[in-house]
Length: 386
Figure (cartoon, rainbow, N blue to C red):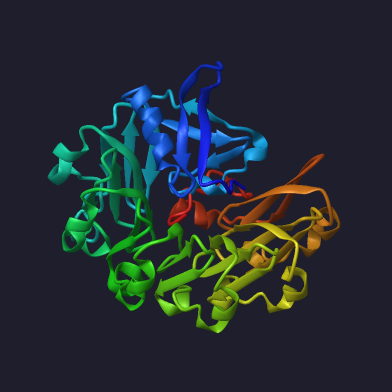
């Protein structure tokens, strides 16, 4: 971790060419590095990597591990449509020139558009878009100037007019759940809109969202954020993880990662403890494996209704709905050591070991139709709210 008040860094292409270099305050988010890269090659989008870790625009520079050196890898994205975002009814493709093309369901049960028709905001989507995110029937796009453009079903986040003055600049990240959005700004504040019950109304925790937020995560109808001091704030539907009061004392400091299933959350603390809350059937209740989650957890991954955690010794712990990978007893002997990564689909997990791959759980064909799974045996699923 970087502790100095200022950090000298170099942004370096794969060829070894230095795109930009300079000294930045450690308190700044990495969005400042992305801005420098974009200035060096206007009209092109990139990803910034430190080792194998992708640096998010909202990552604080102080979180960078300088043991890897001062060089930040710049990977330019070369495809003509390098991002295609989807939700339940429509698609939005972001092109290399920063424009957005949308298609798909234009009406939902005879009601308002679902995001496939962006003609109302077409002029705002012709250039400068750097990120697109979706709810179940709406989209939100961040532009290079930090403004946000929304379209789709108004009640599900397609209409952000009530918070429009707060979305004209400074937005670095947007996260959507099924019916609402939450945006993090460069000053660490959070702006929400969409269905009030599902997290579009954050007034109950507003004083806690005025600054210092570094990460946001969504279940189907709730949001959780991590602040720079490792504190957790939740809001939205209580049954979907919006109420963390039962474990609040465990979430006041030291939280470094949060992961969501459909209706539950799990947080990892700096000492390797995993804390869960939300719908018990979706992994919100980890009491059955609690002794295994008290220390040593380094990574957690979610399926639709279950979680899988990797521990420092390379073992894996699972809990939640058995039909969604929460029961790994059938392959337990293969998950006692050597696991380096876990990935989840809607109803399955795959664990990568130092010498191969072990499948956990199973995936049923019906979820393909709903969520876009490419296989019926645990293939990667482009989850609705992930």
